Image (cartoon, rainbow, N blue to C red):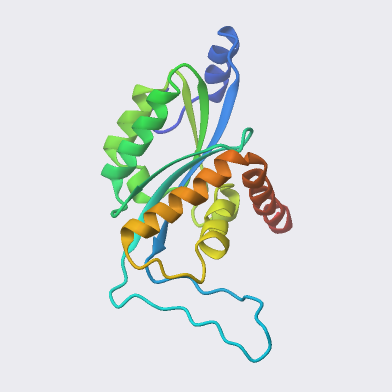
Length: 199
């Protein structure tokens, strides 16, 4: 297999010989901010919702991996979004699934294609195949539906006050999704519908 482009036929044959099943995993990152996302809400006539804002806005970067079959989400949060942190997240994911055959769907963000990341993928090429998405095509990444839910439904219109509370709210939102994977799958289905519209 080449460093950046593998042969899916070889990968599939290897998996079939071992009697293994594939797991289709979509990976991506997003940012949530201490300054809350504001969305439309229902209110009583004559009332007005007041949402405090952060004096100094801060961000929390989320690294996510969504299993298209089970609806399960593996994630990691960190203040920074870069190749080093993505490498840590990816390494955790790959070693936790070293006995499974994974098809990873990734976009072409520069921090996804550094020498360090490509070397890590080569190290796991015996059980990993990467599908690189075209540039500027978020509608092709199923995990985008989860990010949209997180920002506009789970964390919207509420000021958490500090980053510790915001991170705890993120953990609660993901815990709820893990307990109800059918919800995550329905969010992904909305993304799939958008894909069909654009096709």
